[in-house]
Amino acid sequence: MTDQPNQPTDQPSQEEASGQGEAPPEASQPQLAAEPGHPDEEPGTEAQRLAELRDTAEAIGKLAADEKLFNLAVEAFRARDAEQFQAVLAAAGVLQRCRLICRWLCSKHCVFICRKLCDSIEGQHEIDVAEMREFAFVTERLAQDEALLKRLIAAVDREDAKTFRQIIAELKLERFCHQLCHYLCAVRCRLVCKLMCPPPPLITKVGYIPRAHINAAGYASGASNPPGFTPADDPANGIGDHPFGGLTHINGTFSIAGPFQYKVEFATNPAGPWTPIIQPLPDFKLVGMILVDYTRVPDAGGWYDVADMGLGSEGQTYLTDWPTPPAVSDLYYLKLTVRTAALTEFESPIVPVRIDNTAPTKPVIKLQLKKPDGSLIDLDCCEKVEQGDGNKIIISLQASDANFSYISVSLLGGCGVSISIVDTGGNPLSKAYNGNLADTGYPALTSFEWDPWASGIDKCCYLIYVQIWDRVIVTNQWGNRHSNVNWHSITIA
Image 1 (cartoon, helix red, strand yellow):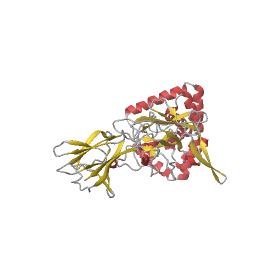
Image 2 (cartoon, helix red, strand yellow):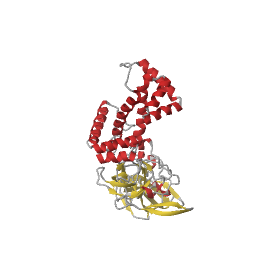
Image 3 (tube, rainbow, N blue to C red):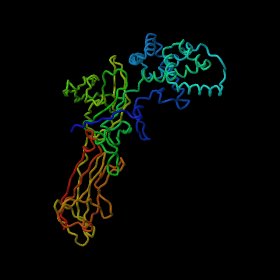
Image 4 (cartoon, rainbow, N blue to C red):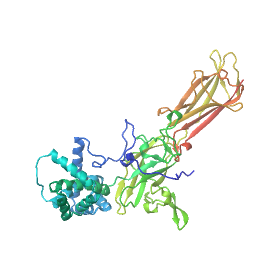
């Protein structure tokens, strides 16, 4: 079956955009270190503040050590050429500190610009709260006049001292000149650095499960996006904490300026070594008025060409299909790497995924007749049992899976009978994992006493039918999960 959603929704959530997702408190999610200085990750403590300053100083010092690269970086920054800026930082070995370097350059740039636009600072040398309040009203008034605000922004962007001073003079705001300039320039810095240093590429979905719904142990929570492939979690009925298996669909976003090629790799350790996924992908394009099918094929290194992504690429988010490895319940890691035409590479945060391509064990069913004196007689298939003076039946079961979902123990037969078997203590033999990852089913032979006569079972021939399922999302669908089955015939007389 080909799992292609009709209307894919693949915009990363806020959690995905920051490279963060769910993770149990006892484990930290394996991923690339978050870059200090990301606008959504402002220092929250003095220690983080010092770390950011140290990291910035180290990165800008390393860049400045090569005068040519430093000059190229400044030129690209001033030209707002994101692709060139990133390529220069990559050549200097400081690409991972892009945001910090951009902020440093922008801070220096603002000092220069505001000195150029406003000359030297005059006035008081102490903080004046009343003056701050007055500037707050000035800021509010300017923001209400969009045309005026655009004129000020344009003057700052063009470094047009004449126009900027003219506007300041018209408004009689000379004493606020530096404050206003730095305020406008600081906002510009956030915009420019977002452009120059976009967030990293992201793997946004695995098997149509959003990245934010996969925890550090590699287990996924439903529901899928789009819906229909995997339902919402319902642990009491065996649904939740899903591994992946089969041919797994992977979506992602490139984020960077000028993406040229990409590859998706997997590993058994977050440090590698990494193996590229080399999987041909179906696609289609419109030629005239005709839809033409074709296949996207990566090179030997696993690199797909972004330009080859057609109408079947789900808005250039369908990255690959992963033929998952043979595994019982093993933790793997996924990583997306995107590069520009200059071969500057950008890596995504690492995504942990648990892989299981093994079916549950075949159920073992052992039946015994228990007499009133406690003695036991083994029962073969099709044996007839009678109530006698208080006979009972002992049902012993063994069936398990590392990612156990549900085991059903039913009595089938007679005239359309299908009931769940309950032991003499009132306990159903059927059960779900119910959120307990340590529950693997019945890993050892487990015995239950059953009284079919007290349960009102009609005299007839029956099957004790046992089926076990795991929780794996196989080839993108929970409905394809692995299972196993067995049965034992018996005649109730």
